[in-house]
Length: 293
Length: 325
Image 1 (cartoon, rainbow over the protein chains, first blue to last red):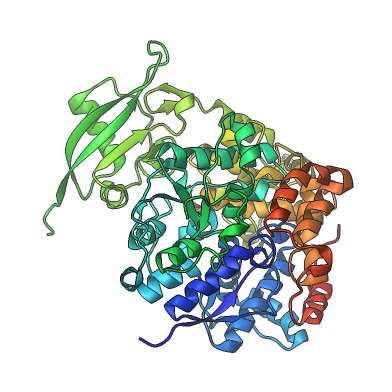
Image 2 (tube, one colour):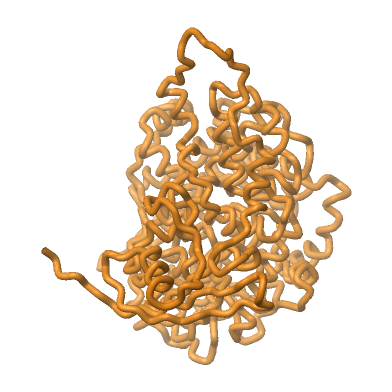
């Protein structure tokens, strides 16, 4: 197989509050022989909030990010669910509306750029499952996670709306019964845990505006995983990770029950199974201690 | 002619009678279903062949009256529009049929939708317009203006989004996706004169659009593809455009992204929280911030990373911004 190569859109948290996510992405890509060209020019995607303030500005900035991936002639790979949604949504809207695309391009031309619509956009989770292949990952596992019950937490913006998401996923994830992360857990040798909240919201996007709502959603998610006997949780989204890893105190108070589980980024889980060290995967950066390694 | 395909499916059906039961229970029926059958056919067969006391709402059988909405394995559906084989493909051969909201069940799959209609009433879901009683000409809406509704008028008030919304499940004050879509539908109508009033209603904290958690479930579950979250975003935009956005944590949180991107290209996470909450409000985050700092999760202001070609981003923000706050 030809070596896989993608344009990496890191998003903001990988550079700030989830350094371990950046470290583990690079470690896993290295193990799998995937080449990632970082889009260092990329701006923040607006995280589903900028478009509430200024939708057009959000479109222009996201189109600019995609234009840089297009200049490399590569598929853009995201490592954050919300970056994935905002970027894929921008692409969808521009590719289906010539008038809007022309308006956005008129702005981009002021800085010598053009959005063409030639690059696909996919989350790293689907890149390694669809393009690299689960079977091949399975063959490369050197430290199977066989003693662990692992609770997958999918994160809204990778699975909904499915009509948009399945434009790029080959796997055709059903948001009411997603399977990609479960399959990846099994490929890494672990047991995947089924629980009601695995495809539900973590509350991240309402944390400041509606703290009680956000805390209860986080609490419910961790409680659901605990009640299903999970040893730890895993998520492809750094924003879910921030909620589940750093906010369990508020969540516990909000739901009236002490909840806490170690939460790994999807890349850290794969990295462990592939034999990466705890240092390489940045496990020391977690607020909820990863105590099983 | 194609042969009729059949498959054995087990149905666990939610049963509850508000007048006689303390707790709900589930009855199990195992039936051979054909590839042509929809969920409503199954409910009819259970009622007609097995248990005449099973209660559910049904009317048009054409996906337009919106009364037969229930949940199948947690997914909001119209019973008359959802093929059994599609459900089996997703969930396997055990299908759990429940009311849209188990806590609002009156009898079996029938719920009390009062909260749903109350939320609708709150946003004036009708055209407010001073029209002459005997107009000389028809009041025509051009196709271009009709498109502005973004098909929000397709809503059949089935409640699938309302009873799937996680924000609403926690916060009773929240107006919710169906009523927001209705608020948009009438506010976007060129004939309407109450747009500003509605925008004030959806702009309130706790009840308004700001409490949306952006899970996208309303877009996913809607059987008529109304896409309520798209309308919620539009309402946010209209609040800013109408210049009635209050200076509060929710609005500053949205605006803060533009400031941050202009300065760094990237989001300055710490500054976003400080700007949104204010210098005093931000103090409540100190305990979590200290824990995060100890784990190397906080970038100090002088180490804040910047996007390459920041001049390009600054230029685009200057030339592409469409609103002011």
